[in-house]
Image (cartoon, rainbow, N blue to C red):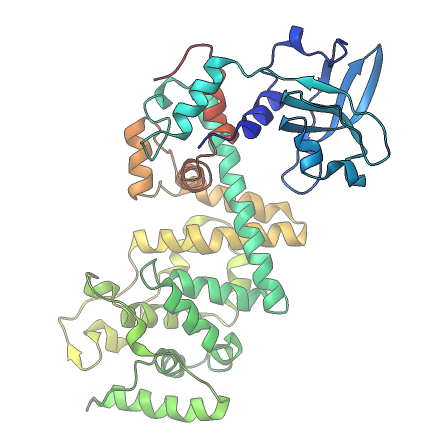
Length: 428
Protein backbone atom coordinates (compact mmCIF):
# COMPACT_ATOMS: atom_id res chain seq x y z
CA UNK A 1 0.00 0.00 0.00
CA UNK A 2 1.29 3.46 -0.90
CA UNK A 3 2.44 5.54 2.06
CA UNK A 4 1.63 9.18 1.31
CA UNK A 5 4.31 10.42 3.71
CA UNK A 6 6.96 8.36 1.90
CA UNK A 7 5.75 9.85 -1.37
CA UNK A 8 6.20 13.34 0.08
CA UNK A 9 9.76 12.36 1.10
CA UNK A 10 10.38 11.23 -2.47
CA UNK A 11 9.06 14.50 -3.91
CA UNK A 12 11.16 16.63 -1.55
CA UNK A 13 14.36 14.62 -2.00
CA UNK A 14 14.13 14.65 -5.79
CA UNK A 15 12.77 18.21 -6.15
CA UNK A 16 9.63 17.07 -7.95
CA UNK A 17 7.44 19.79 -6.45
CA UNK A 18 6.17 22.84 -8.30
CA UNK A 19 8.67 25.54 -7.32
CA UNK A 20 6.12 28.31 -7.92
CA UNK A 21 3.73 26.81 -5.38
CA UNK A 22 6.35 26.34 -2.64
CA UNK A 23 5.12 29.01 -0.24
CA UNK A 24 4.61 29.23 3.50
CA UNK A 25 1.10 29.57 4.88
CA UNK A 26 1.85 33.32 5.02
CA UNK A 27 2.50 33.42 1.28
CA UNK A 28 6.30 33.76 1.52
CA UNK A 29 8.23 32.08 -1.33
CA UNK A 30 10.67 29.32 -0.36
CA UNK A 31 13.73 28.54 -2.47
CA UNK A 32 15.29 25.15 -1.80
CA UNK A 33 19.09 25.29 -1.94
CA UNK A 34 19.70 21.80 -0.49
CA UNK A 35 16.92 19.32 0.32
CA UNK A 36 19.25 17.66 2.84
CA UNK A 37 20.10 14.07 3.65
CA UNK A 38 17.32 11.58 4.32
CA UNK A 39 17.37 10.29 7.89
CA UNK A 40 16.35 6.65 8.39
CA UNK A 41 16.64 6.85 12.18
CA UNK A 42 14.87 8.81 14.92
CA UNK A 43 14.68 12.57 14.51
CA UNK A 44 13.72 14.93 11.66
CA UNK A 45 13.25 13.42 8.20
CA UNK A 46 16.01 15.40 6.46
CA UNK A 47 19.25 16.69 7.95
CA UNK A 48 21.42 19.58 6.81
CA UNK A 49 18.85 21.21 4.55
CA UNK A 50 19.24 24.76 3.22
CA UNK A 51 16.46 27.11 2.14
CA UNK A 52 16.20 30.79 1.26
CA UNK A 53 13.27 32.74 2.69
CA UNK A 54 12.79 36.49 3.22
CA UNK A 55 16.16 37.05 1.56
CA UNK A 56 18.00 34.98 4.17
CA UNK A 57 19.58 31.53 3.98
CA UNK A 58 18.41 29.12 6.66
CA UNK A 59 20.28 25.90 7.49
CA UNK A 60 18.79 23.11 9.55
CA UNK A 61 16.46 20.15 9.29
CA UNK A 62 13.16 19.46 7.55
CA UNK A 63 10.24 17.41 8.85
CA UNK A 64 7.47 16.01 6.63
CA UNK A 65 3.97 14.80 7.50
CA UNK A 66 0.74 14.03 5.71
CA UNK A 67 -1.01 16.72 7.80
CA UNK A 68 0.56 19.44 9.93
CA UNK A 69 -1.42 18.26 12.98
CA UNK A 70 0.71 15.09 12.89
CA UNK A 71 3.48 17.26 14.38
CA UNK A 72 1.58 17.37 17.66
CA UNK A 73 0.22 13.83 17.30
CA UNK A 74 3.80 12.52 17.12
CA UNK A 75 4.92 14.61 20.09
CA UNK A 76 7.46 16.73 18.21
CA UNK A 77 6.32 19.87 20.04
CA UNK A 78 7.78 18.33 23.23
CA UNK A 79 10.98 16.97 21.68
CA UNK A 80 14.16 19.09 21.65
CA UNK A 81 15.47 17.02 18.73
CA UNK A 82 12.99 18.91 16.53
CA UNK A 83 14.04 22.42 17.61
CA UNK A 84 16.44 22.44 14.64
CA UNK A 85 13.60 22.10 12.11
CA UNK A 86 13.59 25.13 9.78
CA UNK A 87 10.67 24.00 7.61
CA UNK A 88 7.69 21.69 8.03
CA UNK A 89 6.15 20.20 4.89
CA UNK A 90 2.68 18.71 4.74
CA UNK A 91 0.10 17.72 2.19
CA UNK A 92 -2.53 19.36 4.37
CA UNK A 93 -1.94 22.44 6.57
CA UNK A 94 -4.58 22.17 9.28
CA UNK A 95 -2.91 23.85 12.25
CA UNK A 96 -0.09 26.15 13.32
CA UNK A 97 2.83 24.32 14.94
CA UNK A 98 5.51 25.28 17.47
CA UNK A 99 8.67 23.52 18.59
CA UNK A 100 9.70 22.59 22.14
CA UNK A 101 11.23 26.04 22.61
CA UNK A 102 7.96 27.76 21.69
CA UNK A 103 9.10 29.01 18.26
CA UNK A 104 6.56 28.90 15.42
CA UNK A 105 7.84 26.58 12.67
CA UNK A 106 7.26 27.77 9.06
CA UNK A 107 5.14 25.40 6.98
CA UNK A 108 4.65 24.68 3.29
CA UNK A 109 1.92 22.71 1.62
CA UNK A 110 3.28 20.24 -0.91
CA UNK A 111 1.00 19.22 -3.75
CA UNK A 112 1.51 15.66 -5.02
CA UNK A 113 1.27 15.63 -8.84
CA UNK A 114 -1.50 13.27 -9.93
CA UNK A 115 0.63 11.38 -12.45
CA UNK A 116 3.31 10.77 -9.81
CA UNK A 117 0.78 9.47 -7.31
CA UNK A 118 -0.76 7.18 -9.95
CA UNK A 119 2.63 5.85 -11.06
CA UNK A 120 3.74 5.17 -7.50
CA UNK A 121 0.44 3.46 -6.72
CA UNK A 122 0.81 1.30 -9.82
CA UNK A 123 4.36 0.17 -9.01
CA UNK A 124 3.87 -0.48 -5.31
CA UNK A 125 0.64 -2.43 -5.88
CA UNK A 126 1.96 -4.25 -8.95
CA UNK A 127 1.01 -7.92 -9.30
CA UNK A 128 4.52 -8.67 -10.56
CA UNK A 129 7.42 -9.72 -8.32
CA UNK A 130 9.45 -7.12 -10.24
CA UNK A 131 7.06 -4.14 -10.09
CA UNK A 132 8.65 -2.35 -13.06
CA UNK A 133 9.46 -5.39 -15.19
CA UNK A 134 7.52 -4.05 -18.19
CA UNK A 135 9.47 -0.78 -18.17
CA UNK A 136 13.05 -1.73 -17.27
CA UNK A 137 14.10 -1.83 -20.91
CA UNK A 138 13.17 1.87 -21.26
CA UNK A 139 15.67 2.98 -18.59
CA UNK A 140 18.98 4.32 -20.00
CA UNK A 141 21.88 1.88 -19.86
CA UNK A 142 24.01 4.39 -17.96
CA UNK A 143 21.44 4.58 -15.18
CA UNK A 144 21.09 0.78 -15.14
CA UNK A 145 24.83 0.28 -14.69
CA UNK A 146 25.24 3.10 -12.19
CA UNK A 147 22.61 1.66 -9.87
CA UNK A 148 24.08 -1.84 -10.17
CA UNK A 149 27.51 -0.52 -9.17
CA UNK A 150 26.00 1.14 -6.11
CA UNK A 151 24.08 -2.00 -5.15
CA UNK A 152 27.21 -4.17 -5.41
CA UNK A 153 28.89 -1.97 -2.82
CA UNK A 154 25.72 -1.80 -0.76
CA UNK A 155 25.56 -5.60 -0.59
CA UNK A 156 29.23 -5.85 0.37
CA UNK A 157 28.77 -3.19 3.06
CA UNK A 158 25.83 -5.10 4.53
CA UNK A 159 27.80 -8.34 4.54
CA UNK A 160 30.75 -6.53 6.13
CA UNK A 161 28.41 -5.35 8.91
CA UNK A 162 27.31 -8.95 9.49
CA UNK A 163 30.95 -10.02 9.66
CA UNK A 164 31.67 -7.27 12.20
CA UNK A 165 28.85 -8.65 14.34
CA UNK A 166 30.48 -12.08 14.11
CA UNK A 167 33.82 -10.55 15.13
CA UNK A 168 32.22 -9.14 18.26
CA UNK A 169 30.87 -12.59 19.03
CA UNK A 170 34.23 -14.33 18.50
CA UNK A 171 36.59 -11.89 20.23
CA UNK A 172 37.79 -10.33 16.96
CA UNK A 173 39.12 -13.64 15.65
CA UNK A 174 39.13 -13.38 11.85
CA UNK A 175 40.10 -17.06 11.61
CA UNK A 176 37.09 -18.17 13.67
CA UNK A 177 34.67 -15.95 11.76
CA UNK A 178 36.04 -17.12 8.41
CA UNK A 179 35.70 -20.74 9.53
CA UNK A 180 32.06 -20.29 10.58
CA UNK A 181 31.04 -18.42 7.40
CA UNK A 182 32.95 -20.83 5.16
CA UNK A 183 31.29 -23.79 6.88
CA UNK A 184 27.85 -22.24 6.51
CA UNK A 185 28.37 -21.70 2.80
CA UNK A 186 29.53 -25.29 2.34
CA UNK A 187 25.91 -26.15 3.14
CA UNK A 188 25.00 -24.47 -0.18
CA UNK A 189 21.63 -23.15 0.96
CA UNK A 190 19.88 -26.44 1.68
CA UNK A 191 22.11 -27.31 4.66
CA UNK A 192 23.57 -23.89 5.48
CA UNK A 193 22.04 -23.73 8.96
CA UNK A 194 23.22 -27.26 9.75
CA UNK A 195 26.78 -26.61 8.58
CA UNK A 196 26.90 -23.44 10.66
CA UNK A 197 25.71 -25.39 13.70
CA UNK A 198 28.48 -27.90 13.03
CA UNK A 199 31.12 -25.15 12.97
CA UNK A 200 29.75 -23.54 16.13
CA UNK A 201 29.90 -26.90 17.92
CA UNK A 202 33.56 -27.38 16.95
CA UNK A 203 35.77 -24.36 17.71
CA UNK A 204 38.39 -23.68 15.07
CA UNK A 205 41.21 -24.03 17.59
CA UNK A 206 40.64 -27.79 17.65
CA UNK A 207 40.87 -27.96 13.87
CA UNK A 208 44.19 -26.11 14.10
CA UNK A 209 45.50 -28.44 16.80
CA UNK A 210 45.09 -31.38 14.42
CA UNK A 211 45.82 -29.68 11.11
CA UNK A 212 48.72 -32.08 10.54
CA UNK A 213 46.26 -34.99 10.24
CA UNK A 214 43.35 -35.05 7.80
CA UNK A 215 42.12 -38.22 9.49
CA UNK A 216 41.75 -36.46 12.85
CA UNK A 217 40.09 -33.41 11.29
CA UNK A 218 37.61 -35.74 9.57
CA UNK A 219 36.99 -37.59 12.84
CA UNK A 220 36.22 -34.30 14.59
CA UNK A 221 33.93 -33.02 11.86
CA UNK A 222 32.01 -36.21 11.10
CA UNK A 223 31.70 -36.93 14.81
CA UNK A 224 30.43 -33.44 15.67
CA UNK A 225 28.01 -33.71 12.75
CA UNK A 226 26.47 -36.79 14.39
CA UNK A 227 27.43 -38.98 11.44
CA UNK A 228 29.45 -41.56 13.40
CA UNK A 229 26.57 -42.94 15.47
CA UNK A 230 25.68 -45.94 13.33
CA UNK A 231 27.00 -49.48 13.57
CA UNK A 232 28.97 -49.99 10.36
CA UNK A 233 31.46 -52.85 10.21
CA UNK A 234 34.06 -51.10 8.13
CA UNK A 235 37.65 -50.37 9.10
CA UNK A 236 37.76 -46.69 8.08
CA UNK A 237 34.45 -45.91 9.76
CA UNK A 238 35.39 -47.72 12.97
CA UNK A 239 38.75 -45.95 13.17
CA UNK A 240 37.04 -42.56 12.71
CA UNK A 241 34.50 -43.46 15.37
CA UNK A 242 37.14 -44.51 17.89
CA UNK A 243 39.27 -41.43 17.19
CA UNK A 244 36.29 -39.15 17.63
CA UNK A 245 35.31 -40.85 20.89
CA UNK A 246 38.78 -40.05 22.25
CA UNK A 247 38.83 -36.44 20.96
CA UNK A 248 35.27 -35.75 22.10
CA UNK A 249 36.19 -36.74 25.65
CA UNK A 250 39.48 -34.85 25.54
CA UNK A 251 37.89 -31.57 24.45
CA UNK A 252 34.52 -32.07 26.18
CA UNK A 253 32.66 -31.62 22.89
CA UNK A 254 28.94 -31.87 22.29
CA UNK A 255 27.92 -32.57 18.71
CA UNK A 256 24.72 -32.03 16.75
CA UNK A 257 22.24 -34.63 15.50
CA UNK A 258 23.10 -36.33 12.21
CA UNK A 259 19.47 -36.51 11.13
CA UNK A 260 19.25 -32.71 10.70
CA UNK A 261 21.22 -32.82 7.44
CA UNK A 262 18.96 -32.87 4.39
CA UNK A 263 19.77 -34.88 1.27
CA UNK A 264 16.40 -35.30 -0.44
CA UNK A 265 16.62 -34.34 -4.13
CA UNK A 266 20.38 -33.80 -3.71
CA UNK A 267 22.82 -35.35 -6.17
CA UNK A 268 25.20 -37.85 -4.51
CA UNK A 269 28.20 -35.62 -5.23
CA UNK A 270 26.54 -32.97 -3.04
CA UNK A 271 25.56 -35.25 -0.13
CA UNK A 272 26.33 -33.67 3.28
CA UNK A 273 29.03 -36.29 4.00
CA UNK A 274 30.82 -35.38 0.76
CA UNK A 275 30.61 -31.65 1.52
CA UNK A 276 31.97 -32.25 5.03
CA UNK A 277 34.82 -34.35 3.60
CA UNK A 278 35.63 -31.55 1.13
CA UNK A 279 35.50 -28.93 3.86
CA UNK A 280 37.70 -31.02 6.16
CA UNK A 281 40.32 -31.35 3.42
CA UNK A 282 40.32 -27.59 2.81
CA UNK A 283 40.55 -26.71 6.51
CA UNK A 284 43.39 -29.19 7.04
CA UNK A 285 45.29 -27.95 4.01
CA UNK A 286 46.49 -24.75 5.65
CA UNK A 287 47.21 -23.90 9.26
CA UNK A 288 45.37 -20.58 9.17
CA UNK A 289 43.27 -20.56 6.04
CA UNK A 290 42.17 -16.92 6.11
CA UNK A 291 45.74 -15.68 6.55
CA UNK A 292 46.73 -17.76 3.53
CA UNK A 293 43.89 -16.36 1.43
CA UNK A 294 44.80 -12.77 2.33
CA UNK A 295 48.12 -13.28 0.55
CA UNK A 296 46.54 -14.39 -2.73
CA UNK A 297 46.49 -11.66 -5.36
CA UNK A 298 44.01 -12.88 -7.97
CA UNK A 299 41.02 -15.09 -8.55
CA UNK A 300 42.86 -17.84 -10.45
CA UNK A 301 45.35 -18.36 -7.62
CA UNK A 302 42.48 -18.42 -5.14
CA UNK A 303 40.40 -20.83 -7.21
CA UNK A 304 43.29 -23.27 -7.64
CA UNK A 305 43.94 -23.24 -3.91
CA UNK A 306 40.31 -24.06 -3.10
CA UNK A 307 40.30 -27.07 -5.44
CA UNK A 308 41.02 -29.66 -2.77
CA UNK A 309 40.37 -33.40 -2.93
CA UNK A 310 38.91 -35.15 0.12
CA UNK A 311 40.64 -38.25 1.53
CA UNK A 312 41.04 -41.41 -0.57
CA UNK A 313 38.07 -43.14 1.05
CA UNK A 314 35.68 -40.62 -0.50
CA UNK A 315 37.01 -41.22 -4.00
CA UNK A 316 35.09 -44.51 -3.97
CA UNK A 317 32.20 -43.71 -1.59
CA UNK A 318 29.19 -41.37 -1.47
CA UNK A 319 28.28 -42.41 2.07
CA UNK A 320 29.74 -44.49 4.88
CA UNK A 321 29.78 -48.23 4.24
CA UNK A 322 28.57 -48.03 0.63
CA UNK A 323 31.20 -48.17 -2.08
CA UNK A 324 30.76 -46.60 -5.52
CA UNK A 325 32.67 -46.30 -8.77
CA UNK A 326 35.91 -44.46 -8.15
CA UNK A 327 35.97 -40.80 -9.16
CA UNK A 328 37.34 -37.56 -7.79
CA UNK A 329 35.08 -35.70 -5.40
CA UNK A 330 36.52 -32.19 -5.67
CA UNK A 331 33.97 -29.35 -5.52
CA UNK A 332 32.86 -28.31 -9.01
CA UNK A 333 33.57 -24.96 -10.62
CA UNK A 334 30.07 -23.62 -9.87
CA UNK A 335 30.34 -24.68 -6.21
CA UNK A 336 33.71 -23.00 -5.76
CA UNK A 337 32.42 -19.83 -7.40
CA UNK A 338 29.61 -19.76 -4.83
CA UNK A 339 32.15 -20.15 -2.03
CA UNK A 340 34.29 -17.33 -3.41
CA UNK A 341 31.31 -15.00 -3.95
CA UNK A 342 29.67 -15.61 -0.57
CA UNK A 343 32.69 -16.22 1.66
CA UNK A 344 36.03 -15.01 0.29
CA UNK A 345 34.83 -11.75 -1.26
CA UNK A 346 32.82 -10.48 1.75
CA UNK A 347 35.63 -11.44 4.13
CA UNK A 348 38.24 -9.61 2.04
CA UNK A 349 36.00 -6.55 1.82
CA UNK A 350 35.24 -6.56 5.55
CA UNK A 351 38.92 -7.03 6.39
CA UNK A 352 39.86 -4.12 4.15
CA UNK A 353 37.26 -1.89 5.81
CA UNK A 354 38.23 -2.92 9.33
CA UNK A 355 41.98 -2.62 8.75
CA UNK A 356 41.73 0.57 6.72
CA UNK A 357 43.46 -1.12 3.78
CA UNK A 358 41.40 -0.37 0.67
CA UNK A 359 43.55 -2.77 -1.36
CA UNK A 360 41.54 -5.70 0.02
CA UNK A 361 38.25 -3.97 -0.82
CA UNK A 362 39.43 -3.36 -4.37
CA UNK A 363 40.61 -6.96 -4.66
CA UNK A 364 37.21 -8.20 -3.49
CA UNK A 365 35.41 -6.22 -6.20
CA UNK A 366 37.98 -7.25 -8.84
CA UNK A 367 37.33 -10.90 -8.00
CA UNK A 368 33.56 -10.42 -8.40
CA UNK A 369 34.13 -8.77 -11.77
CA UNK A 370 36.25 -11.75 -12.86
CA UNK A 371 33.62 -14.39 -12.10
CA UNK A 372 30.77 -15.03 -14.50
CA UNK A 373 27.30 -14.02 -13.26
CA UNK A 374 25.35 -16.38 -11.05
CA UNK A 375 22.52 -18.39 -12.52
CA UNK A 376 19.50 -18.56 -10.25
CA UNK A 377 15.81 -17.74 -10.33
CA UNK A 378 16.37 -14.07 -9.39
CA UNK A 379 18.96 -13.52 -12.10
CA UNK A 380 16.83 -15.25 -14.74
CA UNK A 381 13.87 -13.07 -13.78
CA UNK A 382 15.87 -9.88 -14.39
CA UNK A 383 17.34 -11.18 -17.64
CA UNK A 384 13.79 -11.80 -18.88
CA UNK A 385 12.92 -8.21 -17.92
CA UNK A 386 15.87 -6.79 -19.86
CA UNK A 387 18.78 -6.56 -17.41
CA UNK A 388 21.58 -9.02 -18.16
CA UNK A 389 24.46 -9.10 -15.64
CA UNK A 390 27.97 -9.00 -17.08
CA UNK A 391 29.64 -10.68 -14.10
CA UNK A 392 29.17 -11.75 -10.48
CA UNK A 393 29.40 -8.14 -9.28
CA UNK A 394 26.27 -7.39 -11.33
CA UNK A 395 24.47 -10.56 -10.24
CA UNK A 396 25.16 -9.75 -6.57
CA UNK A 397 23.76 -6.26 -7.21
CA UNK A 398 20.64 -7.77 -8.76
CA UNK A 399 20.12 -10.03 -5.73
CA UNK A 400 20.46 -6.98 -3.48
CA UNK A 401 17.97 -5.06 -5.64
CA UNK A 402 15.44 -7.87 -5.56
CA UNK A 403 15.62 -8.54 -1.83
CA UNK A 404 16.00 -5.02 -0.48
CA UNK A 405 13.86 -3.06 -2.95
CA UNK A 406 11.57 -5.16 -5.15
CA UNK A 407 10.37 -7.59 -2.47
CA UNK A 408 9.88 -4.75 0.01
CA UNK A 409 8.22 -2.56 -2.65
CA UNK A 410 10.71 0.25 -1.95
CA UNK A 411 10.23 1.67 -5.45
CA UNK A 412 10.44 5.22 -4.08
CA UNK A 413 14.03 4.55 -2.96
CA UNK A 414 15.18 2.71 -6.10
CA UNK A 415 16.90 4.62 -8.90
CA UNK A 416 14.97 2.64 -11.50
CA UNK A 417 11.76 3.53 -9.66
CA UNK A 418 12.86 7.16 -9.55
CA UNK A 419 13.48 7.14 -13.29
CA UNK A 420 9.97 5.83 -13.96
CA UNK A 421 8.18 7.94 -11.36
CA UNK A 422 9.77 11.16 -12.61
CA UNK A 423 8.19 10.96 -16.07
CA UNK A 424 5.13 13.10 -16.71
CA UNK A 425 3.09 10.38 -18.38
CA UNK A 426 1.22 7.68 -16.48
CA UNK A 427 2.87 4.25 -16.73
CA UNK A 428 0.70 1.19 -17.30
